[in-house]
Length: 152
Figure (cartoon, one colour):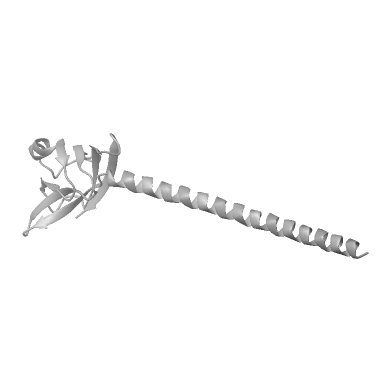
């Protein structure tokens, strides 16, 4: 009789230990899956950052010098140099001098935090908003294009 009680207690203890082991394994599996997901996200973020470090970011803006002198400043605010920088004016270029544009563009290299200025002949009848098309190459891609809308 005592043997049956001890055998029954051993069976219950064995069932309890098996149940705890299964629960522990389920938690361990969830933790491993969570770690794998976190590692994938960290890797994706690192790859994205590495790509961003190789990317140039061009922009343009009007600046006013003195009372009536205007310049269009094309600049690189990205961490990488831009190569073969080209500029276009999809809506026309009525206030820019062709010889000034042709002497500066295409620009071989525009380093980070560097800029180039174009003379702008702004008059009272000039438009107040211009579309500027910028195209360049950098370490992340051979084809980068951006349209910037600059206002006076």
